[in-house]
Length: 219
Image (tube, rainbow, N blue to C red; front, side, top):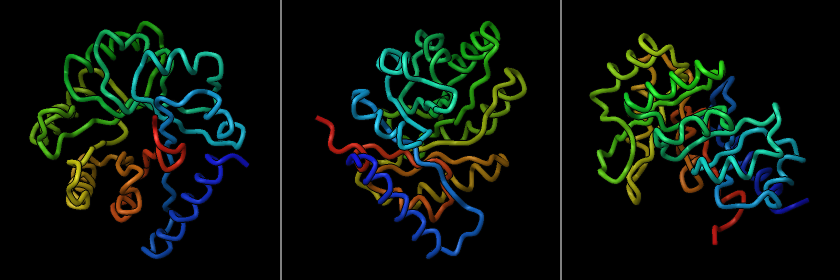
């Protein structure tokens, strides 16, 4: 058994234990193994192990890395920022985009999806900490942006995503995202990473983005 498999099994056990502790029923979040910067040699053992959800930050890197091994069984998630000039390439390889955050990008995605007759699933990224260096829409614009995406562009918006400010307690942000998600009646929540995924469970995150805890430190 490879380290990554052991790590994933350990994380799964921790998650099950925490969910029992929280007394949540019918709740089983998915783990996105964030494989950015790691080569296929590190990823393949998890594919062979049967893991289905993988996350990448860069479109170009993902396209080169996954083009020969991507199968229908694997869900590939873009969790990094998406530039409009990379939309066409992103749509060819990814199944989920977690970083939808502006109208120009949404429009470009809508146009390209029609051309290739493929529909991806999207999370709207919200900048809850209002940090200039981070992507994400302003929370006050969420409702109008969501409405534009589904009514004008017919995008399949399944949930929301956030990256809490580094070094702060993430729980107030997780709680806020959960409430915003409910207000739009969305089912999926993308929050929780290697350092705080157990905290994200308290707020019913459905997709946990875990990288270094599975694959080890990035060099």
